Image (cartoon, rainbow, N blue to C red):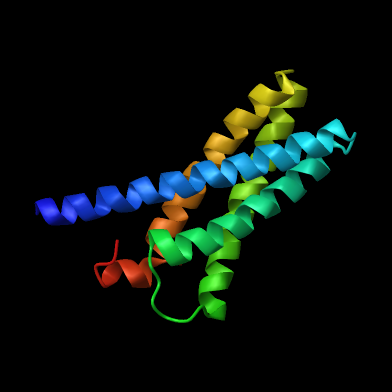
Length: 137
């Protein structure tokens, strides 16, 4: 039982570590682009894509240690979860910035946290589920 819990906690720690890297990439690209006067919604699309690519590579190979060769079904599941998270962050970023008139940085942080929750649950329960059923961490 303790080994199983230790394994799952290790996976969560790895996912969070990858998430920090994704978030750093996302924020750097976002604020560089908005600093160059790219509209914040376009900047969000570019920055999210950069973080998403990083996420797939690291989570597939390190967090979930997928042994099987990448396949189209896995990639489509990953894209589906990330598109859902992206749509959510885009909607929330716009809502927080325009409707609630929050500062851009605060809006970005809260929208990102919501997106992270979606990607974790989706990755854990659906995208990389085959690796989990084999007891991988």
